[in-house]
Length: 371
Image (cartoon, rainbow, N blue to C red):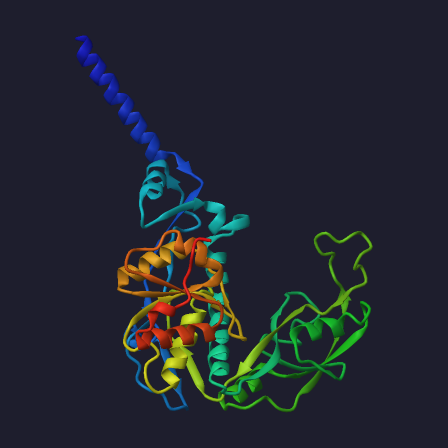
């Protein structure tokens, strides 16, 4: 065989081997890319994203788009070619697999966690919006979860409103744990509750749950917490529940959006609710997108995947992007052309900035920087 032919054949075989290796060898990385954006003032799958009944609403134009990030599944492993392409592409980010799925978390576990965070973010968005509009919202302490096999199983249920513990009224979830741990393991503790069904009926009617029934539960010794010494906390009493908060709204607010998880849409849901409950437009017809968690007090928190959300927003047509304060530096370091970042710390910051955008007074908008 001529030397040249042999060399070409050998090179081809090496290339084929490298290609096969690139496809077959898996690497511990995952990919993030821009996900869909949804206008909270508009519709998704043929129905309004925000549905409000029992209160006068007003038409709202423009866009207040929430943004998302698309990620590869927990069970998917990228090959070398996919990882290299992702590193070179501008519209995707390759990150260590454990960044998205820490501690060996499965895709099902991650989806469930995201769904719970999404549900909680909706509640906080409603509370923050109504508080911003000075509309009263009632808050009560509820049973959030009941541990299987615990003394509370079958006696307390998720959604039960906790009015008192041993006759002492509770106002915060932490009050419940504090009152329970005043007991020693083996002692009885008495809860005054409104069962979940009655509480749900009261919430639907727009009133606080009334009355209450007494439930007595025998405490048990808490398992040692991580980092506890052998003796530390050994006599701490528990009943096997986690307390949380629930709210009673004076009218019904439903957020209809499927296949979305996590808490990062909270800010944009709040602004959409405010826009629908007030005359005129918050945006003046402008295309505004954004992201950020929100708590009941209206504080905006940071999120993940900010650069991908910027790309998704600009691709959808956004001109302004409401950016959580703690995400500002990374967002400013890689901002798509034509997109103006607006720094926000609270829902009040966001509404004031929207007023400036509506009026065309954008020179004074709080901006993000890399510093």
